[in-house]
Length: 196
Image (cartoon, rainbow, N blue to C red; front, side, top):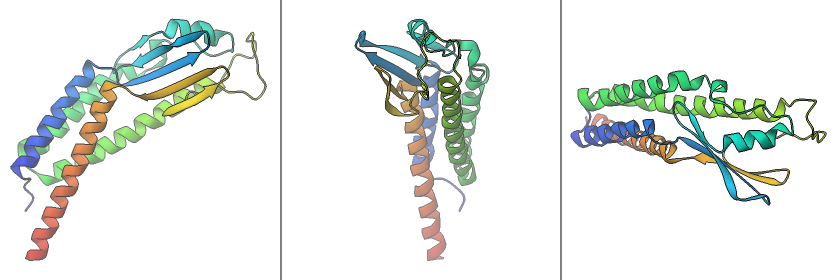
């Protein structure tokens, strides 16, 4: 009754092991375009570091009083590799044991982790865009420079974009597959109970 189908276990194992790719792929990207930067500026967020044009972005943002972006401002980099490792282990438990309960637990962890990750990113963006240096060279009363959580946003003469990068899509894909498998297994279990 509590056993997962073998096809479910195999698909889940492959989807979970795909999370290993997130150690080698950027999770998120932020892009900026302006008339003086028509080719755009890009910043990528990885599990344990940032890369891209953040030095140029820091130089621009200095004039409007924003903090300099540096790896030290993201304490998440110290523990995120371990969090993902833990998720992989938990995701493999239902595949190895065949227990439906572990699948539901994995799905709950993925959903909770995704929600907490987005909340954390929102709080960082809010602080980064609102806590400005009052002595900055350029000050626009009432203006904040919070980057978009997802999608596009106009910030003065810049257009900013924020969204998942390759590693982020791997996470999303794993989550979608795990949720679909959990719903499928739950429906199968409900049908078996009804027939009895």
